[in-house]
Image (cartoon, rainbow, N blue to C red; front, side, top):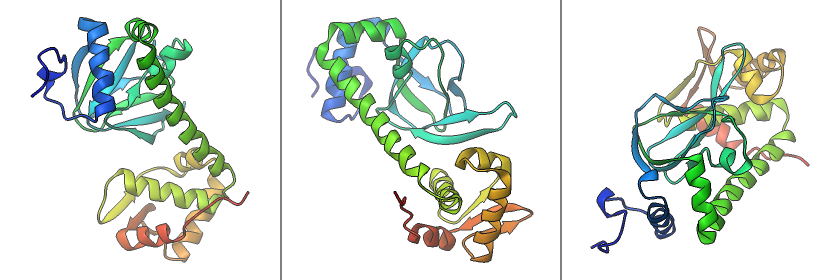
Length: 235
């Protein structure tokens, strides 16, 4: 049974102890400034370049981060899941605009509070501030390691990892049909479209992928073969 003064008891949440303690502290300090919200599937939560006025502490569901190009191409490059935060980096660094667009992949539940309330909470509670900053640093450090490793890969390895990530993001058990344009793939892996076309040709010839109406196909067997490449950077 939850304690009578437990501000989380009304939400009936099954949370890891550190996250539960963090949210309990937030609700006690912020009170009504922390609003429980439901985020609908396939709707944007924040948009890149919009004013960064809100911070979300995600409790359930799945979201994706989108990179947007002037050409109108949008592609997903990362996921947010339970206990991630959205907008905290902009709040802490003082950035007035959101850096990325985040869209709900499923129906999500989150606590939402203004940037000012979020910062006041951190100022008043050193323990909460340390926990939030530790979570943020861990996320950024992981991304830094991924990005640095990525720089040392050649085009075929980057493209292979891109295909693996696309397959995994869609939680497929059978077949991936990649609807990305060659330009979109080039933007993702950091090479030109000619290089992407050479990668497509090579992986098709080697049987790692197939083409259907110029769309890249990866079935389950091909996905397992891509995983077996065990790609690592050469420093």
